[in-house]
Length: 189
Image: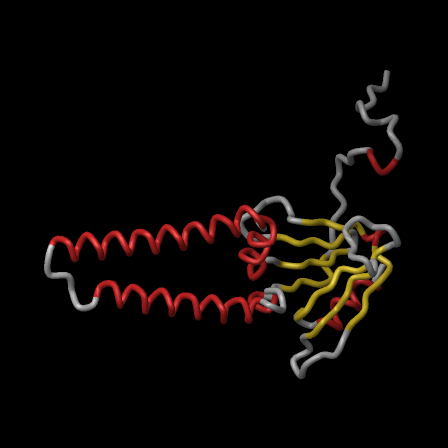
């Protein structure tokens, strides 16, 4: 009497395998700071201007050093108010754009892997991948103008109507290391 596993009557893609199929990595990239969105430099520049303004305001509050109790009360109160305003702005940004802010903060740590079965976006401290796209959803890739080190823009072309794609049906990478090897890895079976 044969005892079949409970998923034996399911269609082939949904049957669990007891013997894992080895997965071969064809391309692996860790873009680092190049993975930050294109406008991140401008945002950092404006943020540094705001930080400079905060330093000037704190200097104006605390210089010359307070000499009386009322001076200390004013300096501590103004510093607390300034700190609460800064925290309030950060909380508003977190509440309005939580996913974007989280994506920007962890983007320098993401690794992109192309294997013979899927494309993975992973973080070193997470066991499960951030995103995974099966090779059956990939049509190919497009590479843009490369710099002298081989880094540049690339696009992952997905099947029409794929939920992970943008309006063009692609996933774009701005500054991918060895972009030509990425596109070549997408065309390998």
